[in-house]
Image (cartoon, rainbow, N blue to C red):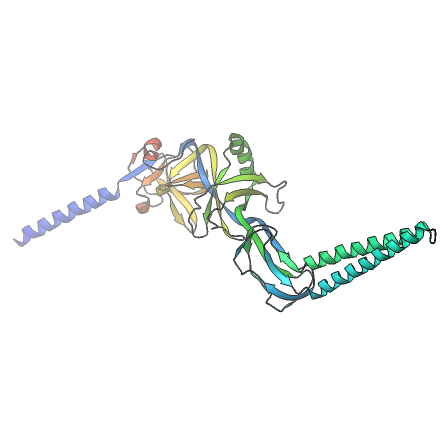
Length: 355
């Protein structure tokens, strides 16, 4: 009985080992597919208001009133701050009094000139003195108007650094005002990508881009690439693009960051499934099968990626055969048996954007 049990155990173990060996030896291979396609590339971007200005004091004095709060939405012409106007009111009153005296002098001079008591030149001098007094009134009114600081356009108030009673110097920063009805998004593009854009994208009118926010959620509105700067940055080799995004929900603020999502067209691109790759120290590799069915790892560089797919830049050719299934259990210089699947068949089960 013991001998029979031993034989049964040995037979079971051998069958189990044989099945494991067969399972370990099951591999699937495919090849890169050359195809015209496109992929979405991310560009780090800076988000700016269509209008963002600093509001500064144009007169010196004590801050008498603050009519708004930080973060408040204001309308064009709305009163924001008031600097104590007493000294400027006094200057205006003085200028008006001097103008009134000059007007009386002119009337007297005109009467005397008509009687030939004084010359016409003296009348002209009295007229000039009145004109000068009126100019002083206009200047005094202008200085007085500067004590009231108003919003030049609709927007959102930023931080207010000064408090009531603060002594304000001429030119001192009162706050900033941002018009966030629409937003400018700036991003840098390399020279080859710029040439591709001008050749393949702009010519067909497809200048739409998306925006990925800092929380990795896409903005629900698309933007339009409006303009490209006039020259490349000699240090980076990049050129700046500007896209305009609508902002009806007021979600975007001046100074935010994000990533512009631009669809980049590709002609004769090599595509492979992502699952055919593995990563070591931030580098991507695939197993390439030679004519003797021996596998060897090969480093590849990726131009871009799509869901489930990589667009190959360097490292593979269309004729290469690469390991698709069994990558995790394969080792360099292993001789394997595999089943070949056409790349069209493999990619038909994956997500691919074609042009």
